[in-house]
Amino acid sequence: QAMDIEKVNSMDFGEFVDVFGNVIERCPLIAAAVWSQRPFSDLEDLKKHFFAFIDALPQSAQELRTALGEVKKIGSLRLADLLRADPAKL
Image 1 (cartoon, rainbow, N blue to C red):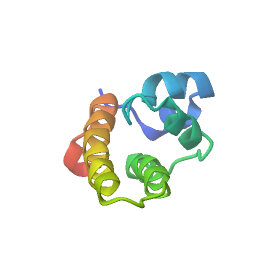
Image 2 (image 1 turned 90 degrees about the vertical axis):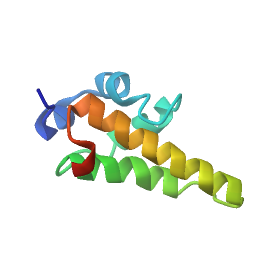
Image 3 (image 1 turned 45 degrees about the horizontal axis):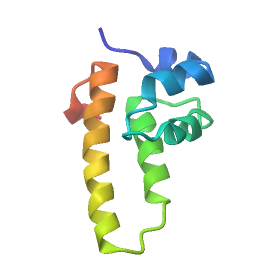
């Protein structure tokens, strides 16, 4: 069963970080920062907040840009899995 956005928006800080803390591998700090952006309008909005955080990081090196692209792909799959959603719809 898919997790709806109301459930995501109702999570307290600890629960949100527990559930989403590994969307970006070993970076629960990102989930903690995203939690403060609630409420999310939908699951796509949640994903946009995760990626906006990544996009705001300094991108001074080409290698970093490439790595962050891979991080986003993995993050999308992890979000889809956690939310039991179709990755193509996120």
